Image (tube, rainbow, N blue to C red):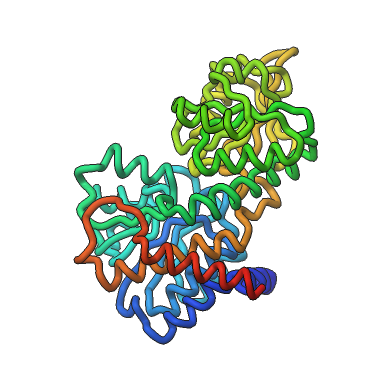
Length: 383
């Protein structure tokens, strides 16, 4: 626990904006008497956010994600009075049970990362005052499959231009490429890196991989995104074309089944696959396990052999690579200072003015974006 406490203190030192909000919350207590359910990766940066909510009066119950929860950090979080449901042997079945349990608890507010907790509460008929949703994949789920059933305001943090630029493009882009290189110890120079999805995360992955000498190919179903990628100086291709050319393949779409076994079969011997998206389903690893013989080379690197002449390699079982790969720590602390301040301010708004907000998913209000942007600029100038 001592090591975790030190890492959390180091992290807080580099999150001055959120630390300032936490000090304010300790005086204003916007969450007094409110229960907040969190579904988010549990590591030192999220610990700083949880601490801010607790200082604001919240009773917090948290559930992380299989493969990314840091249990020494969990022990420290629990010492603050936060209930954490994660267990080291959790699998998909136990996570579903945890979500059902949380849905039955009747929280006042939710902070979600993939919309699974929000959906569980909708299905259970236990709607809170409001919720925040962190991710692209969660926003897709709410807007496409639950559009008529979200009977509460949901502030989609991912819709904020601040998150798009600072956290997604720069935070995710940098940390994903770092994770791929550090896990494999390979150089990207002269390699063809195929990026699936040219949203903000994909833009960042392409930019940082190019900065390490890679040749970039972008795959996206939207021709407008392909044109943007071309204007940014990157190559574009269909998935099948890219499969035959690429050395490294990184998914960043927020969609399931982007890279399936049929596409993997078209890739060259030695192809390397990683996922930057929230879920572990962008690459169909479950199908890959049935189609090829698997062997673990490193804790976060698995070889899948189709025969004597064809193997591919997958990092972190297709889980979010910048958190699940051994030694990875996710986005930079400073980028998450911005992202989690957006979360804290949005939850504060839901706690105090939920009845004035429109039902369903909607973006972070402009006033919060402007306030947080100015605060981050001030922090950068005084660093």
